[in-house]
Length: 166
Image (cartoon, rainbow, N blue to C red; front, side, top):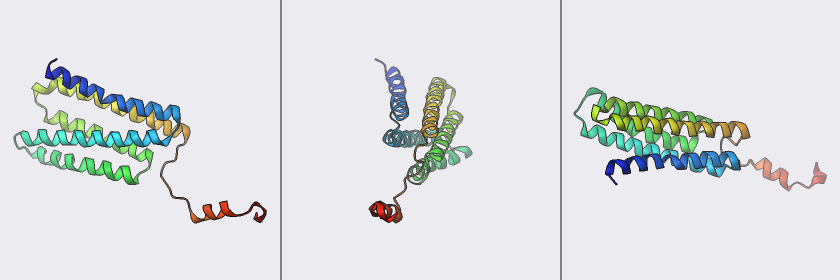
């Protein structure tokens, strides 16, 4: 099998976890699958940012390359901060925006030899965004907890109160 065919197989296979975890979260109504989905999404965002960085290093210097290099470094940081501190709704919006921006950077820096790669990236990016919308639907439909919150001291105090105290 040719290297080009393996690249396509691996690229398309990368969609499988997105679909599995987004659909599993809808069927199971369980935050675990949502968390795994987001972690996988961050991993893929970091991979794409690294790939963009490598491509930019190999290209001749241009003014826009500096901006794209900065974005390639900032995108994973934004995704990591979002993963730690942001609600599900906002994470989906941020990740979708980053996927679109990475695709735009890839397209703007691609030469004509990479037209097949850019078409494949458009297809993959579109499907990744679709899975994020499936997850958004799940979060809206099942009103899944938007942020992790620790229980308040009043909650534990109230649960220890004898029922006669009420």
